[in-house]
Image (cartoon, rainbow, N blue to C red; front, side):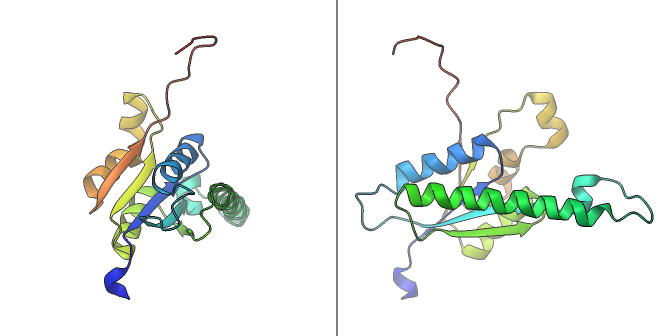
Amino acid sequence: MAATAKPVMIVGVDESEQSFYALEWALDHFFVPSASNHPFNLIIVNSKPTPVSSLGFSVPGVDILSHVDVDLKNIANRVVEKAKELCISKSVNDAKLEIVEGDARNVLCDAVERHHATILAVGSHGHGAIKRAVLGSVSDYVTHHAHCTVMIVKMPKAKHEGAHH
C-alpha cells in the first residue's frame, strides 16, 4: 500500500484571514469536487504558541499561564474547526487536522519531515519590511528551511470599489 500512497500537502493555518485564503485557494486548485481522487492527502497544521512565548514574562506567584493557555487552546480549536468546515464545504472530508504546540516556523518544518510532505502551503501576511525584519516571516523561514516545495498564497489586493475588469 505504501508504494501507491499519495503525496502529502500540508497547509499551515492560524487565525488570520490570509491563512484561510491560502487553505481555500489550495482546496479550489488541488481538490476540485469533480475529481473523486484528489492528487494529495491534505494535512492542515495549526501551531499553538506555548503560553510562555506568547506572554514573554512571568509574574511570581500568579498563575497567568493557565488562563493564557486556555485562551490559546480555544483559539487553536476555533481555527481547526473553521478549517474543517471549509474543507467539508469544498467536499474534502478526509483532511487530517493537527494542533502542534510551538513556533509556527519549526512546527511547519517538523510537520513536513514527519509526514514526508511534497508541498507546504502557507498564506502571506504581507507585513511591511520593518515588521517582517522584527517578527521574522514564517513564509520566508519555511521557504529556506522546509525540505519540500513551498507555496506562498497571496491574497489579491483589495479591488477598487466599482472597478470593472
